[in-house]
Length: 448
View 1 (cartoon, rainbow, N blue to C red):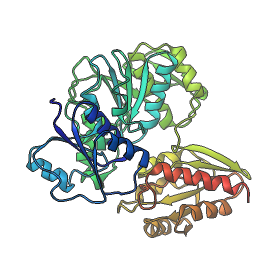
View 2 (cartoon, one colour):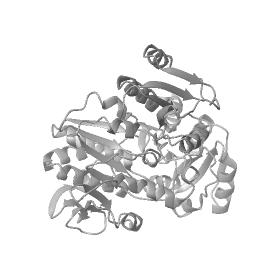
View 3 (cartoon, helix red, strand yellow):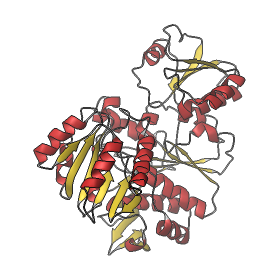
Protein backbone atom coordinates (compact mmCIF):
# COMPACT_ATOMS: atom_id res chain seq x y z
CA UNK A 1 0.00 0.00 0.00
CA UNK A 2 1.53 3.27 -1.11
CA UNK A 3 2.34 6.10 1.24
CA UNK A 4 1.70 9.80 0.62
CA UNK A 5 -1.66 9.03 -0.98
CA UNK A 6 -4.93 10.61 0.13
CA UNK A 7 -7.29 8.92 2.61
CA UNK A 8 -10.80 9.95 3.62
CA UNK A 9 -12.14 9.16 7.10
CA UNK A 10 -15.95 9.18 7.27
CA UNK A 11 -17.24 9.57 10.83
CA UNK A 12 -15.12 10.76 13.73
CA UNK A 13 -15.93 9.06 17.06
CA UNK A 14 -13.15 7.07 18.74
CA UNK A 15 -12.47 4.87 15.72
CA UNK A 16 -12.25 7.74 13.20
CA UNK A 17 -9.88 9.66 15.45
CA UNK A 18 -7.53 6.66 15.84
CA UNK A 19 -7.75 5.77 12.12
CA UNK A 20 -6.82 9.33 11.11
CA UNK A 21 -3.77 9.31 13.41
CA UNK A 22 -2.57 5.96 12.06
CA UNK A 23 -3.01 7.07 8.45
CA UNK A 24 -0.97 10.24 9.02
CA UNK A 25 1.78 8.22 10.70
CA UNK A 26 1.94 6.08 7.55
CA UNK A 27 2.38 9.12 5.29
CA UNK A 28 -1.18 9.74 4.14
CA UNK A 29 -2.82 13.09 3.54
CA UNK A 30 -6.05 12.77 5.54
CA UNK A 31 -9.48 14.41 5.46
CA UNK A 32 -11.98 13.64 8.24
CA UNK A 33 -15.68 14.35 7.73
CA UNK A 34 -18.52 14.11 10.26
CA UNK A 35 -22.04 15.59 10.16
CA UNK A 36 -21.92 16.14 13.92
CA UNK A 37 -20.29 19.42 14.96
CA UNK A 38 -20.02 18.38 18.65
CA UNK A 39 -16.60 16.78 18.90
CA UNK A 40 -13.89 16.24 21.52
CA UNK A 41 -11.89 19.48 21.40
CA UNK A 42 -8.61 17.90 22.56
CA UNK A 43 -8.84 15.29 19.80
CA UNK A 44 -9.67 18.00 17.24
CA UNK A 45 -6.64 20.06 18.30
CA UNK A 46 -4.39 17.02 18.05
CA UNK A 47 -5.63 16.09 14.55
CA UNK A 48 -5.25 19.71 13.36
CA UNK A 49 -1.69 19.77 14.70
CA UNK A 50 -0.95 16.66 12.60
CA UNK A 51 -2.09 18.50 9.46
CA UNK A 52 -5.39 16.66 9.16
CA UNK A 53 -8.23 18.55 7.48
CA UNK A 54 -11.52 18.24 9.39
CA UNK A 55 -14.91 19.10 7.87
CA UNK A 56 -17.85 19.04 10.27
CA UNK A 57 -21.57 19.76 10.09
CA UNK A 58 -22.41 18.39 6.64
CA UNK A 59 -21.33 16.06 3.83
CA UNK A 60 -20.49 18.45 0.95
CA UNK A 61 -21.40 17.01 -2.47
CA UNK A 62 -18.01 17.64 -4.07
CA UNK A 63 -15.81 16.31 -1.26
CA UNK A 64 -15.24 12.81 -2.72
CA UNK A 65 -13.27 12.50 -5.94
CA UNK A 66 -10.98 9.95 -7.57
CA UNK A 67 -7.84 11.29 -5.87
CA UNK A 68 -8.55 9.23 -2.71
CA UNK A 69 -6.83 5.87 -2.27
CA UNK A 70 -9.38 4.70 0.30
CA UNK A 71 -12.31 5.64 2.48
CA UNK A 72 -12.16 4.50 6.11
CA UNK A 73 -15.80 4.36 7.27
CA UNK A 74 -17.13 4.38 10.82
CA UNK A 75 -18.86 1.00 11.35
CA UNK A 76 -22.14 2.69 12.35
CA UNK A 77 -22.52 4.51 9.02
CA UNK A 78 -24.68 2.76 6.44
CA UNK A 79 -23.16 1.34 3.26
CA UNK A 80 -25.93 3.28 1.48
CA UNK A 81 -24.40 6.64 2.51
CA UNK A 82 -23.98 8.92 -0.53
CA UNK A 83 -20.17 9.00 -0.13
CA UNK A 84 -20.00 5.20 -0.09
CA UNK A 85 -22.13 5.00 -3.25
CA UNK A 86 -19.86 7.59 -4.90
CA UNK A 87 -16.77 5.64 -3.80
CA UNK A 88 -18.18 2.52 -5.49
CA UNK A 89 -18.73 4.47 -8.72
CA UNK A 90 -15.12 5.71 -8.55
CA UNK A 91 -13.73 2.28 -7.54
CA UNK A 92 -12.31 3.65 -4.28
CA UNK A 93 -11.96 0.85 -1.67
CA UNK A 94 -14.16 1.35 1.42
CA UNK A 95 -12.73 -0.21 4.59
CA UNK A 96 -13.03 0.42 8.35
CA UNK A 97 -10.51 0.99 11.10
CA UNK A 98 -10.34 -2.74 11.96
CA UNK A 99 -9.25 -3.57 8.40
CA UNK A 100 -6.87 -0.59 8.33
CA UNK A 101 -5.20 -1.61 11.60
CA UNK A 102 -4.90 -5.24 10.53
CA UNK A 103 -2.87 -4.22 7.47
CA UNK A 104 -0.20 -2.80 9.79
CA UNK A 105 -0.16 -5.58 12.41
CA UNK A 106 3.19 -7.37 12.90
CA UNK A 107 2.97 -10.74 11.13
CA UNK A 108 3.40 -12.77 14.34
CA UNK A 109 0.41 -11.38 16.27
CA UNK A 110 -2.17 -14.04 17.22
CA UNK A 111 -5.68 -12.70 16.60
CA UNK A 112 -8.74 -14.00 18.44
CA UNK A 113 -12.02 -12.66 17.06
CA UNK A 114 -15.36 -13.02 18.86
CA UNK A 115 -18.70 -12.35 17.16
CA UNK A 116 -22.34 -13.40 17.54
CA UNK A 117 -25.67 -11.74 18.29
CA UNK A 118 -25.32 -11.97 22.08
CA UNK A 119 -22.53 -12.72 24.53
CA UNK A 120 -19.72 -11.17 22.46
CA UNK A 121 -18.55 -8.67 25.05
CA UNK A 122 -18.69 -11.07 28.00
CA UNK A 123 -16.93 -13.85 26.08
CA UNK A 124 -14.22 -11.48 24.81
CA UNK A 125 -13.61 -10.14 28.32
CA UNK A 126 -13.40 -13.64 29.88
CA UNK A 127 -10.87 -14.74 27.23
CA UNK A 128 -8.79 -11.62 27.88
CA UNK A 129 -8.89 -12.07 31.67
CA UNK A 130 -7.87 -15.75 31.44
CA UNK A 131 -4.95 -15.02 29.09
CA UNK A 132 -3.84 -12.13 31.29
CA UNK A 133 -4.01 -14.37 34.37
CA UNK A 134 -1.76 -16.90 32.60
CA UNK A 135 0.85 -14.16 31.99
CA UNK A 136 0.38 -13.96 28.22
CA UNK A 137 1.17 -10.69 26.44
CA UNK A 138 -2.43 -9.87 25.53
CA UNK A 139 -4.41 -6.80 24.43
CA UNK A 140 -8.19 -6.24 24.54
CA UNK A 141 -9.63 -4.32 21.57
CA UNK A 142 -12.35 -3.86 18.97
CA UNK A 143 -16.08 -3.29 19.36
CA UNK A 144 -15.64 -3.51 23.14
CA UNK A 145 -14.67 0.19 23.05
CA UNK A 146 -10.96 0.22 22.19
CA UNK A 147 -10.27 1.02 18.50
CA UNK A 148 -7.87 -1.48 16.95
CA UNK A 149 -5.82 1.28 15.29
CA UNK A 150 -4.70 2.52 18.72
CA UNK A 151 -2.77 -0.75 19.30
CA UNK A 152 -0.76 -0.91 16.06
CA UNK A 153 2.29 0.89 17.47
CA UNK A 154 2.32 -1.28 20.65
CA UNK A 155 1.99 -4.77 19.16
CA UNK A 156 4.94 -7.08 18.59
CA UNK A 157 5.41 -10.66 17.38
CA UNK A 158 3.68 -13.32 19.51
CA UNK A 159 1.40 -10.81 21.24
CA UNK A 160 -2.24 -11.85 21.41
CA UNK A 161 -5.00 -9.50 20.22
CA UNK A 162 -8.40 -10.41 21.68
CA UNK A 163 -11.10 -8.53 19.83
CA UNK A 164 -14.86 -8.27 19.88
CA UNK A 165 -15.94 -7.93 16.25
CA UNK A 166 -19.43 -6.68 15.35
CA UNK A 167 -21.39 -7.35 12.16
CA UNK A 168 -21.07 -3.61 11.40
CA UNK A 169 -17.28 -4.01 11.44
CA UNK A 170 -17.37 -7.19 9.34
CA UNK A 171 -19.25 -5.30 6.60
CA UNK A 172 -16.12 -3.57 5.38
CA UNK A 173 -13.25 -6.02 5.81
CA UNK A 174 -11.37 -7.73 2.99
CA UNK A 175 -7.88 -8.89 4.15
CA UNK A 176 -8.75 -9.16 7.88
CA UNK A 177 -8.12 -12.65 9.25
CA UNK A 178 -8.12 -14.21 12.71
CA UNK A 179 -6.26 -17.28 13.97
CA UNK A 180 -9.15 -18.25 16.26
CA UNK A 181 -12.77 -17.17 15.68
CA UNK A 182 -15.70 -17.62 18.05
CA UNK A 183 -19.35 -17.46 16.93
CA UNK A 184 -21.43 -17.33 20.12
CA UNK A 185 -24.97 -17.57 18.69
CA UNK A 186 -27.25 -16.09 16.04
CA UNK A 187 -30.67 -14.43 16.11
CA UNK A 188 -32.31 -11.57 14.23
CA UNK A 189 -30.67 -8.21 14.91
CA UNK A 190 -29.70 -4.99 13.11
CA UNK A 191 -32.09 -5.73 10.25
CA UNK A 192 -32.59 -1.99 9.74
CA UNK A 193 -28.85 -1.73 8.98
CA UNK A 194 -28.42 -4.85 6.83
CA UNK A 195 -31.83 -5.16 5.19
CA UNK A 196 -32.32 -8.88 5.85
CA UNK A 197 -31.44 -11.64 8.31
CA UNK A 198 -29.54 -13.55 5.61
CA UNK A 199 -27.29 -10.56 4.90
CA UNK A 200 -26.69 -10.13 8.65
CA UNK A 201 -25.75 -13.82 9.05
CA UNK A 202 -23.39 -13.68 6.10
CA UNK A 203 -21.64 -10.68 7.64
CA UNK A 204 -21.09 -12.72 10.82
CA UNK A 205 -19.66 -15.54 8.71
CA UNK A 206 -16.85 -13.22 7.56
CA UNK A 207 -15.18 -13.78 10.96
CA UNK A 208 -13.94 -17.03 9.34
CA UNK A 209 -12.59 -15.30 6.19
CA UNK A 210 -9.29 -16.67 4.84
CA UNK A 211 -9.29 -19.52 7.39
CA UNK A 212 -7.48 -22.76 6.62
CA UNK A 213 -7.27 -25.99 8.62
CA UNK A 214 -4.56 -24.29 10.70
CA UNK A 215 -7.14 -21.82 12.03
CA UNK A 216 -9.76 -22.60 14.66
CA UNK A 217 -13.50 -21.95 14.49
CA UNK A 218 -15.25 -22.24 17.89
CA UNK A 219 -18.98 -22.80 17.46
CA UNK A 220 -22.16 -23.09 19.51
CA UNK A 221 -23.20 -26.74 19.10
CA UNK A 222 -26.70 -25.93 20.43
CA UNK A 223 -27.45 -23.43 17.64
CA UNK A 224 -28.71 -24.92 14.38
CA UNK A 225 -28.36 -21.45 12.81
CA UNK A 226 -24.64 -21.38 13.71
CA UNK A 227 -24.00 -24.93 12.48
CA UNK A 228 -25.84 -24.34 9.19
CA UNK A 229 -24.04 -21.07 8.52
CA UNK A 230 -20.57 -22.54 9.21
CA UNK A 231 -21.17 -25.84 7.43
CA UNK A 232 -18.62 -25.08 4.69
CA UNK A 233 -15.95 -23.05 6.52
CA UNK A 234 -12.35 -24.27 6.18
CA UNK A 235 -11.47 -23.85 9.86
CA UNK A 236 -10.76 -26.72 12.26
CA UNK A 237 -13.99 -26.76 14.25
CA UNK A 238 -14.28 -26.91 18.03
CA UNK A 239 -17.53 -26.65 19.97
CA UNK A 240 -19.23 -25.67 23.21
CA UNK A 241 -22.63 -26.89 24.36
CA UNK A 242 -24.78 -26.63 27.48
CA UNK A 243 -26.80 -29.73 26.49
CA UNK A 244 -24.73 -32.18 24.41
CA UNK A 245 -21.53 -33.82 25.65
CA UNK A 246 -18.84 -33.39 22.99
CA UNK A 247 -15.25 -34.50 22.62
CA UNK A 248 -14.22 -31.49 20.56
CA UNK A 249 -14.47 -28.77 23.18
CA UNK A 250 -16.61 -27.87 26.20
CA UNK A 251 -19.85 -29.21 27.59
CA UNK A 252 -21.87 -29.34 30.81
CA UNK A 253 -22.63 -32.56 32.69
CA UNK A 254 -23.59 -33.37 36.30
CA UNK A 255 -23.12 -29.76 37.41
CA UNK A 256 -19.63 -29.31 35.93
CA UNK A 257 -18.07 -27.72 32.87
CA UNK A 258 -15.93 -30.28 31.05
CA UNK A 259 -13.24 -29.73 28.44
CA UNK A 260 -13.15 -32.95 26.41
CA UNK A 261 -13.30 -35.49 29.28
CA UNK A 262 -11.69 -33.30 31.93
CA UNK A 263 -13.63 -31.59 34.69
CA UNK A 264 -12.71 -27.90 34.71
CA UNK A 265 -15.01 -26.22 37.24
CA UNK A 266 -18.31 -26.77 39.09
CA UNK A 267 -21.11 -24.52 37.84
CA UNK A 268 -21.81 -23.34 41.38
CA UNK A 269 -18.24 -21.99 41.52
CA UNK A 270 -18.68 -19.86 38.37
CA UNK A 271 -19.39 -16.31 39.55
CA UNK A 272 -21.43 -15.37 36.47
CA UNK A 273 -24.77 -17.15 36.60
CA UNK A 274 -27.19 -18.26 33.88
CA UNK A 275 -27.04 -20.68 30.96
CA UNK A 276 -25.95 -17.91 28.56
CA UNK A 277 -23.00 -17.04 30.80
CA UNK A 278 -21.96 -20.69 31.10
CA UNK A 279 -21.93 -20.79 27.29
CA UNK A 280 -19.77 -17.64 27.19
CA UNK A 281 -17.41 -19.22 29.73
CA UNK A 282 -17.18 -22.47 27.73
CA UNK A 283 -16.34 -20.61 24.50
CA UNK A 284 -13.58 -18.81 26.42
CA UNK A 285 -12.25 -22.09 27.87
CA UNK A 286 -11.94 -23.61 24.37
CA UNK A 287 -9.93 -20.55 23.23
CA UNK A 288 -7.70 -20.74 26.31
CA UNK A 289 -7.04 -24.47 25.80
CA UNK A 290 -6.04 -23.84 22.16
CA UNK A 291 -3.37 -21.49 23.55
CA UNK A 292 -2.12 -23.96 26.17
CA UNK A 293 -3.53 -22.24 29.26
CA UNK A 294 -3.63 -24.23 32.52
CA UNK A 295 -6.88 -25.15 34.30
CA UNK A 296 -5.68 -23.12 37.26
CA UNK A 297 -5.78 -19.78 35.40
CA UNK A 298 -9.18 -20.61 33.91
CA UNK A 299 -10.74 -21.57 37.27
CA UNK A 300 -9.26 -18.54 38.99
CA UNK A 301 -10.91 -16.13 36.53
CA UNK A 302 -14.29 -17.91 36.36
CA UNK A 303 -14.53 -17.86 40.17
CA UNK A 304 -13.93 -14.10 40.33
CA UNK A 305 -15.07 -12.50 37.05
CA UNK A 306 -18.24 -10.53 37.80
CA UNK A 307 -19.34 -9.55 34.32
CA UNK A 308 -19.36 -6.61 31.94
CA UNK A 309 -20.70 -3.13 32.57
CA UNK A 310 -24.21 -2.60 31.11
CA UNK A 311 -24.75 -6.34 30.61
CA UNK A 312 -26.89 -7.77 33.46
CA UNK A 313 -24.89 -5.52 35.78
CA UNK A 314 -26.02 -5.51 39.40
CA UNK A 315 -26.36 -1.86 40.47
CA UNK A 316 -27.76 -1.69 44.00
CA UNK A 317 -30.35 -2.99 46.46
CA UNK A 318 -32.70 -0.39 47.94
CA UNK A 319 -35.39 -1.51 50.43
CA UNK A 320 -34.88 -5.11 49.32
CA UNK A 321 -35.42 -4.20 45.65
CA UNK A 322 -32.53 -5.26 43.35
CA UNK A 323 -31.66 -3.00 40.40
CA UNK A 324 -29.98 -4.42 37.28
CA UNK A 325 -28.55 -2.45 34.37
CA UNK A 326 -28.82 -4.37 31.10
CA UNK A 327 -28.63 -1.34 28.81
CA UNK A 328 -26.54 -3.34 26.33
CA UNK A 329 -29.69 -5.33 25.48
CA UNK A 330 -30.57 -3.52 22.27
CA UNK A 331 -32.47 -6.46 20.74
CA UNK A 332 -35.24 -8.89 21.71
CA UNK A 333 -32.97 -11.93 22.22
CA UNK A 334 -30.79 -10.08 24.75
CA UNK A 335 -33.87 -9.07 26.74
CA UNK A 336 -35.17 -12.67 26.62
CA UNK A 337 -31.87 -13.80 28.18
CA UNK A 338 -32.10 -11.14 30.88
CA UNK A 339 -35.70 -12.02 31.78
CA UNK A 340 -34.89 -15.75 31.86
CA UNK A 341 -32.22 -15.04 34.48
CA UNK A 342 -34.74 -14.05 37.19
CA UNK A 343 -37.50 -16.02 38.89
CA UNK A 344 -38.56 -13.18 41.19
CA UNK A 345 -41.29 -10.56 40.52
CA UNK A 346 -39.86 -8.06 38.04
CA UNK A 347 -40.54 -4.50 36.90
CA UNK A 348 -39.21 -4.25 33.34
CA UNK A 349 -38.05 -0.99 31.74
CA UNK A 350 -38.53 -1.23 27.96
CA UNK A 351 -38.01 1.44 25.31
CA UNK A 352 -35.75 3.43 23.06
CA UNK A 353 -35.35 3.82 19.31
CA UNK A 354 -38.40 2.52 17.40
CA UNK A 355 -37.05 0.37 14.60
CA UNK A 356 -40.52 -1.05 13.95
CA UNK A 357 -39.39 -4.44 15.30
CA UNK A 358 -41.94 -6.77 16.91
CA UNK A 359 -41.91 -7.40 20.66
CA UNK A 360 -43.96 -10.61 20.29
CA UNK A 361 -41.01 -12.91 20.97
CA UNK A 362 -40.83 -11.55 24.53
CA UNK A 363 -44.27 -12.97 25.39
CA UNK A 364 -43.05 -16.32 26.73
CA UNK A 365 -40.48 -14.58 28.94
CA UNK A 366 -42.84 -12.28 30.84
CA UNK A 367 -44.01 -14.83 33.40
CA UNK A 368 -42.52 -12.93 36.36
CA UNK A 369 -43.05 -9.43 34.98
CA UNK A 370 -45.58 -7.57 37.15
CA UNK A 371 -45.26 -4.20 35.40
CA UNK A 372 -43.71 -2.85 32.19
CA UNK A 373 -42.57 0.77 32.24
CA UNK A 374 -42.34 2.02 28.64
CA UNK A 375 -40.34 5.12 27.68
CA UNK A 376 -38.73 6.72 24.65
CA UNK A 377 -39.69 6.58 20.99
CA UNK A 378 -41.11 3.01 21.06
CA UNK A 379 -43.29 3.59 24.15
CA UNK A 380 -46.73 3.58 22.47
CA UNK A 381 -46.06 0.32 20.61
CA UNK A 382 -44.74 -1.22 23.83
CA UNK A 383 -47.93 -0.18 25.65
CA UNK A 384 -50.04 -1.91 22.94
CA UNK A 385 -47.87 -5.04 23.28
CA UNK A 386 -48.26 -5.05 27.08
CA UNK A 387 -52.07 -4.73 26.82
CA UNK A 388 -52.08 -7.66 24.39
CA UNK A 389 -50.09 -9.71 26.95
CA UNK A 390 -52.38 -8.69 29.82
CA UNK A 391 -49.50 -7.04 31.72
CA UNK A 392 -49.93 -3.64 33.39
CA UNK A 393 -47.94 -0.91 31.63
CA UNK A 394 -47.10 2.68 32.54
CA UNK A 395 -45.90 5.09 29.84
CA UNK A 396 -43.42 7.90 30.52
CA UNK A 397 -41.14 9.99 28.33
CA UNK A 398 -37.72 9.66 29.92
CA UNK A 399 -35.53 7.04 31.55
CA UNK A 400 -35.34 9.16 34.73
CA UNK A 401 -39.15 9.06 35.06
CA UNK A 402 -39.17 5.34 34.23
CA UNK A 403 -36.63 4.53 36.96
CA UNK A 404 -38.47 6.47 39.66
CA UNK A 405 -41.84 4.97 38.67
CA UNK A 406 -40.35 1.44 38.63
CA UNK A 407 -38.96 1.91 42.15
CA UNK A 408 -42.25 3.29 43.49
CA UNK A 409 -44.17 0.39 41.94
CA UNK A 410 -41.87 -2.45 43.04
CA UNK A 411 -42.49 -4.47 46.20
CA UNK A 412 -39.96 -6.03 48.56
CA UNK A 413 -37.99 -8.83 46.91
CA UNK A 414 -38.62 -7.42 43.43
CA UNK A 415 -36.12 -6.93 40.61
CA UNK A 416 -36.12 -3.66 38.66
CA UNK A 417 -34.56 -4.49 35.29
CA UNK A 418 -33.47 -2.05 32.60
CA UNK A 419 -33.34 -4.31 29.54
CA UNK A 420 -34.71 -2.05 26.82
CA UNK A 421 -34.89 -4.40 23.75
CA UNK A 422 -34.28 -1.24 21.69
CA UNK A 423 -31.29 0.78 20.55
CA UNK A 424 -30.54 3.92 22.58
CA UNK A 425 -30.20 6.47 19.79
CA UNK A 426 -33.59 8.15 20.18
CA UNK A 427 -32.41 9.86 23.39
CA UNK A 428 -28.78 8.83 23.96
CA UNK A 429 -25.43 8.76 22.16
CA UNK A 430 -25.05 5.04 22.94
CA UNK A 431 -26.14 2.27 25.31
CA UNK A 432 -23.31 3.18 27.72
CA UNK A 433 -24.65 6.70 28.27
CA UNK A 434 -28.13 5.19 28.80
CA UNK A 435 -26.82 2.63 31.30
CA UNK A 436 -24.80 5.23 33.20
CA UNK A 437 -27.83 7.51 33.50
CA UNK A 438 -29.90 4.59 34.85
CA UNK A 439 -27.19 3.90 37.47
CA UNK A 440 -27.12 7.59 38.46
CA UNK A 441 -30.93 7.58 38.81
CA UNK A 442 -30.77 4.45 41.01
CA UNK A 443 -28.08 6.03 43.22
CA UNK A 444 -30.31 9.09 43.75
CA UNK A 445 -33.28 6.89 44.74
CA UNK A 446 -31.34 5.68 47.76
CA UNK A 447 -31.35 9.22 49.18
CA UNK A 448 -35.06 9.88 48.82
